[in-house]
Length: 468
Image (cartoon, rainbow, N blue to C red; front, top):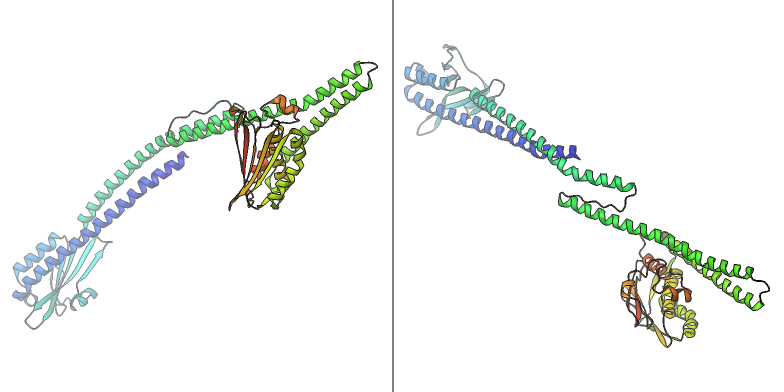
């Protein structure tokens, strides 16, 4: 990460500066060359104006004009050649001409057509301007000659070289500064992350009770907070797992212990009456049945914890399903002296696993009956909208204490352990119910007042949505 950070700083900081300096130098060079050509063109016009009235192009012997031409050539550290309309060289500041010398070039020929030629000889650092000498009369303009002016641009190149050196020094200095800053900044940035890695390595050794406290950037602190939340959740899961194992061991051991005590009591007695044998065997049978219920519920819970792909989804008439469940449980309600009430507000067809949903709803209604009182009631209602169907199971039973309402869906949790065992409960019914509802992408909520009753609200989508 430090290398990546360093690379990013160089790309973001140095490369744009280098490009900017390169563009700036190119713009300066272009402007300087353009200005030099403009100056040369002005000088060419000035020399043309001096030559025309004096007949210089034919006489070639005007000392004042020769002096001015030499002065301009010297100023530009170059050469000036003057050509008449016969292409004869009239003047050459290098002194390399005679009466029979001609200057024939593409630029000069174009110049007699009225064109101005500008050539930048980058290899030799020269600018070459070919400018026409135009004689203007009332009738027309006639090109009577040409001025070929060379100008050295070593002064421009010298300035450019100095600017390039200063830009290079500045870029190198800035690069060093950026590298040093990037190393420092990346170290500051990665230091909290190293602490996170160190904490994770420490936690993998089993120290789940130790959180992570890392101060630094806001995002790093958020990572630390999220990590601590994850640890808290992992610790809770671990505690739940240990508690589950402990509860399973205890719940499975209790009926076996009771069976063992009953059997040993019979073996220790001689000439035991048949009635006592029968009484003890009935108790043993109940304990075996209780053990079987616990094992079956555990197996159901294990199956429900498997992938949702094992859901056997089909289109089910929820009204008929509830009526069947109530029909099966009505004898239990009659025995308990509990009145059963069923309300259906509309026909409901939904995509559900009929067996699993039947198990979940049966657990809710059965609990409402078991934890009720004489002359009590259980009201089951069904409703739906365009997206969900809703099942409400309300009772007039003993209610659930407020502090226990968040725990009743935990495995083996019982509000009243003595009454639960008397009623044959295993402490797994609500855990199974919640698992089934969650597998259907639904939700369950409980509202209860101790001594007044309990209401469970179930919401399940009408169309099953498989887990991706």
